[in-house]
Amino acid sequence: MVVAAEGDDPFSLKNSDKWVPISGSNGSTSDPIVFFTAATGIVYKLSAMWEVGEIFSAGLAFRSIQWNMEEEHRTSDMQSLGVQFRINFASNTKKVVPYFQGAYYFSNSNYMEQAQATGSSPDKTQPAFSTSQKTSLGFDADFGLEVKVSNNLGLQFTLGFMGTQATEPGYELDLDYGAYQGPSNLDGVFNYSLSTGLKYYVGRGAKKRDF
Image 1: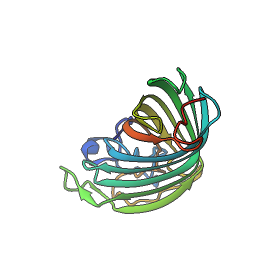
Image 2: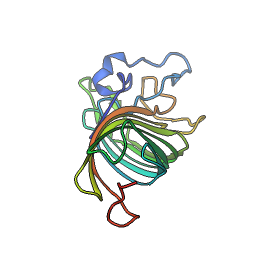
Image 3: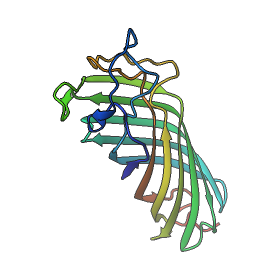
């Protein structure tokens, strides 16, 4: 499960009292849509790691997040591919292993959609749009605990902080907010995650943990 760590969005309908009327020829501001305000979602992660030793391991990671912003009438799907490392605070031969895990995602695909909706003021309507973007910046920073189930199987619990860039630098968003100023672009997302999972050991027969 993930929860966005974002502030208020000045262009959301629940903040419609903050919408600024257009003055002169200026139809947009330099402010972005804080797209992931009040976002929650489900995160799926798959990784393949090589244990270099009892303390350190590294490998590849794939992450998928399905976001929902019900109050804002928005949804998003993110897929990320990158490299991951893990540092154990105890030998991986122990029954319980606390660890720190970090990842850098060099390929991020993000689909974002906003539905047309009208707020409490009938003249304040947010326009519908959808966009797909690929970016090169994403990360994970997790603290976790692995509990040995068998020589080949471990149960993992992680609590972490993530970040993903929503759009490439220079991306501009042109939306018609009628008599009100519109946003200039889309903001990325920082979020907290809580997850559980299984780790399966392969190699060196049935006793991968026995160094």
